[in-house]
Image (tube, rainbow, N blue to C red):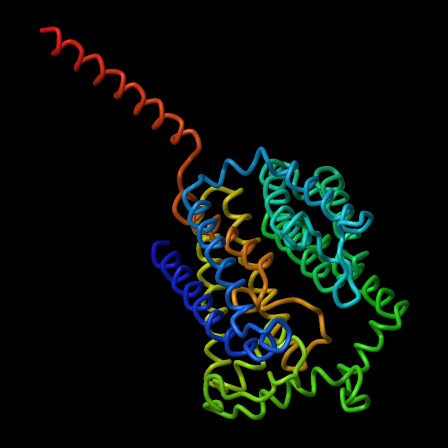
Amino acid sequence: MKTSLATIVTVVGILIALSIIMIYSTSGIFAQEKFADENYYLKKQMIWVSVSLFCMIVFSYLPYRILRPLALVGVFAALALLVVTLLSPLGQAAGGASRWLKLGPIRFQPSEIAKLAIIVYMADVVARKQATVTEFFKSLLAPSILVGIVLVCVLKQPDLGTTVLLACTWMVIMFIGGIRFRYVVIFIMTGVVNLYFLIKLFPYRMKRIISFLDPFKDPHGSGFQIIQSFIALGSGGLHGVGLGQGTQKLFYLPEAHTDFIFAIIGEELGLIGTSSIVLLFAVFCISGMMIAYKCTDIFGKLLAAGITMMITAQALINMCVVTGMLPTKGIPLPFLSFGGSNLLVNSIAIGILINVGVRGNEQPENAVLKTKRNAAAAEYNKGERKRLANA
């Protein structure tokens, strides 16, 4: 397990270091044009990186089991933030979606908090109901309804990509926890039917599907972004045009420093650069699942699997969108895209994952006994010191 932990720390470190370089490369000209400061986005990201790394370290030392009593509170807190975002003036729209909540100088996405809250909550519920987990309607129906309400709030923003991601994470945790396979099949079939109607009933989603199937039908409209992404990836070739030398970031490719940063990596660092990113996330996925597999505590196992699934799925969806294998979703590339909410939540998740790797084989009972023994030993030593001082 030590090897998996070292691998995860190394992978995340490389991704964050590369993100700092690429965000400066992709956003400098845009920041100079908009804010008269080419380092504007770099400075903001450095602040978020510092805060995120601090939180990662803190959560890597905090025993992950202390999250269990807070699981239900976390889900209701995430739900409350989502409702406030949708219904109050504090919610802010960006790109046609009300996904942001502004509290004073801080602006963040409650849906990012919901990702981690659902993982902790479902891991706790499934771990507590192991005796009856095979019977979905008996043990997991009520918790799943609560998760469903959260998903509806995310969908109303609207954010179909994150909704699908959360639903997949929810199913993975239940499947690993021991739910019968027939229920998983039913959920997948129901999800596919719902997804069809959610796309069919909303013209802008249908437009995205059409542009995904043939972006060149509307090269100056719905297909523009993905075509520019193709140009960036194609221009890079094997070795890339060189760091900082890409041209697609010069107001051709929208969101070059956020959701489409992978395309600029392909342009400037080539196929070698993009393949390295894919390899890093594959290594992360394997290492995270190894931690989950070796963990003897069911709550820790589900927590590790859920976190690994969440981050890997985000990366996979983002890279598939950028390469034209999926319609545009608005999901950032973990640890690489510009943005604070996603980086902070993912960093906290990594801290929890590290702690599961360190403490996952400890039995709670043994930990309590160890604490009591240490307290008794300290009391004994204190008494001995007093006795010797009085002698």
